[in-house]
Length: 106
Image (cartoon, rainbow, N blue to C red; front, side, top):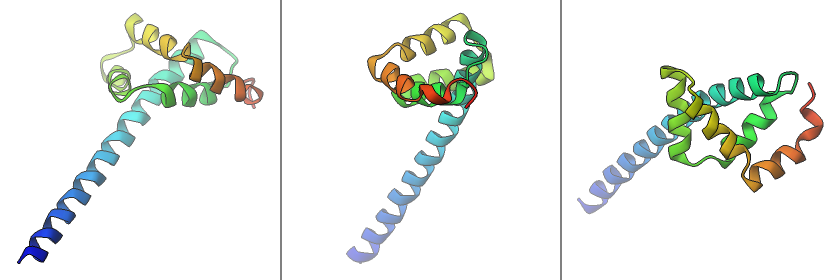
């Protein structure tokens, strides 16, 4: 009986983990769309994808959720400021610099 309960609990935890990963992926994808738009608007002619990836990788989970929300409610000045603030973090700046060869339409 204990083994059966353990298996049920394990299956339940695995299902929750899969659901959380799916939700995280959706939020990150939505946030990437918003960040990409902000980068393209602020830096025309720059390949936004590498910059977007650097910004998303440095954003916290709550920041990603907040930015992803703008894909539904619309991008506000607050959203733009949040994206720019994340982009200014040392780790994001370093990432952007390392990917600079692909920034100009690479």
